[in-house]
Image (cartoon, rainbow, N blue to C red; front, side):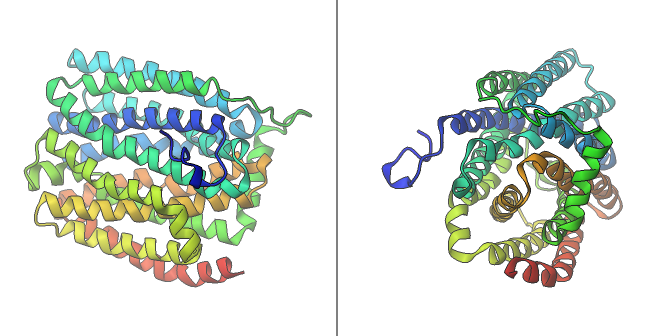
Length: 404
């Protein structure tokens, strides 16, 4: 049953939205299995945290290199069509990875190349997924729709997928990759049923002009510009810590592949709770308080993660972090969807994500270097301190902008 199935839930979200929701959940579950399996695969090939971090960095490098042209594509083509076509390509890529893993030929270079290729497709499909929500949902329902999207994403990618991926990996290294390939194919089939929306029937501006329009719009909007920079610093710090999480969990705290998957699943409980309650919390406390509190919690929790004495404490802290991250996402995604003109949503979103996610590869590499030099616990306190300093700098700007 979908979350809006009860009469007391208020105005219903449309059927087309729920097809998007199901596709998101199926794809997220496969991605969760993939997310658990790839670090484990890398850790079986090498124990060098720098090489493990390279694989993580490769998956996010496309957000730095390809985000701007992807946003222009999202604004000039049918968004549902882009999503299912690129997910079909991802299904083929994941199937090739499955074959390579089954034959024992999936080393660190192949893992990094495959992660980059899958990430390149994800840049287009993820941009389109956020931009399509206002096409399917009325503005008053955006917080609820985005909250449901965050919930199903976290439920699949962090709660269901990782333990399944860990269990499948214990049986056969190729199994979770095959599951990811199947999830991409099924998700693409659902997305192909979404209604079509034509873009700019009078023609498209040149690609360079289209990209420039998105850059210029975001540069002139102080609030979204500040949030994009803040997101960039925070994702850099997140990946600085998380790039070698698999080594912290397996080498320092002694978890096996199944335990690592269960750790990620336990951590996802906070994210799922945040998605289910986000719209209500934001409506009661206000966007400003939720943003500032979420960022402060993230900074404190990251310091605590580095000091975790055992896997239980680590899982609890990861869950609290996930709760705060989801609330941040619900607020900021809804703000973009409400403030950005529909014809610019893909391009502005791509610039926002290029700034916000483009530093993730650098964070992963920095995390590998810090872990190699100072130990597997060190990246998290370093990231927490950086997050706290950034919040103190950005707080006056956020307060003024959101109050106005």
